[in-house]
Image 1 (tube, rainbow, N blue to C red):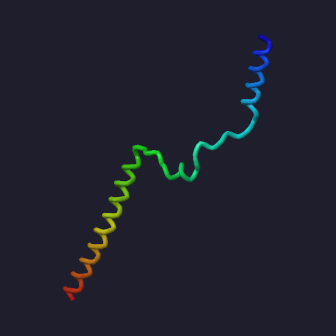
Image 2 (image 1 turned 45 degrees about the vertical axis):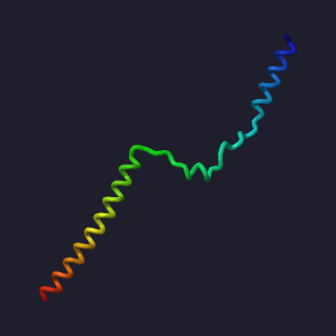
Image 3 (image 1 turned 90 degrees about the horizontal axis):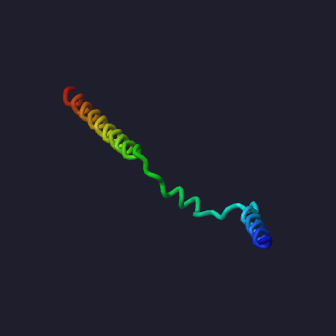
Length: 72
């Protein structure tokens, strides 16, 4: 019984030796894999809407230029 308790203590001390744990994966690979949140889809939709608005504004400005040129 005494031998078992000494062995158990030795194993416990060896397990808590203070060595840093081995990395589970490459941090670069972890950055590439992102966690999806409910707001990701909304952010994509918002960005798409902003891009469409830029196109519409550019087309409106071009059309206004054409109208000004025709009226002169």
